[in-house]
Image (tube, rainbow over all chains, first blue to last red; front, side):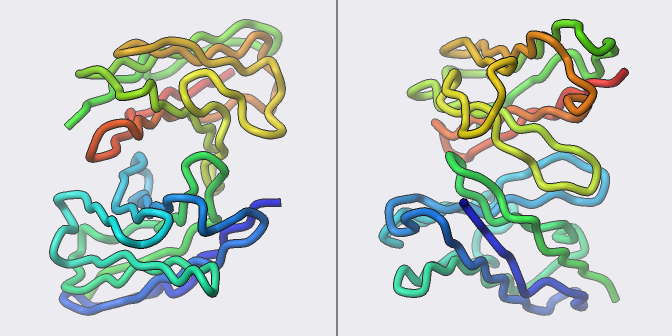
Length: 113
Length: 107
């Protein structure tokens, strides 16, 4: 069974940082691109970033480019999202996603003073 | 950016009826890399269809996807009570990846 378990969310002030993690199991992690997708309260889904199976290629939405960094540790089957210079508009549930297999349950990030 | 337009915004149907959801792209989706997801309140999205027409593991065969290029369709042949939810399409063929705005299927 595919399992994606996010952690690291919480309340942070504008300008602050958070690091999200996603523990993957139930599939061959090293064979898949992985993504982060977010959903603001009551809103739709927005793609944030993706990383290739070996970690050599990364892409970002314009709204987070230069502030967020995606990475992965294939030895530990773990995906990360380092979020810096956070803004109020980054408030959302952040999902770890394998486009072809499934989604995690999400972790809430709240940016507020 | 590839804009995905889902229609209708809301679909009001009864159990047993057929649901047809549309997802139209502003430009051709490479390799027909389009997926459909179902989301219920306070739950994560659930993968239904990938590569436009491939059913995900464990998804009942009343769900089917079709289409290519810029026009895609999700069909639910006979609505079950648990199918009432919001449905999103996602294109992953072009950067940036983009989602449609969703179609709510309600009773």
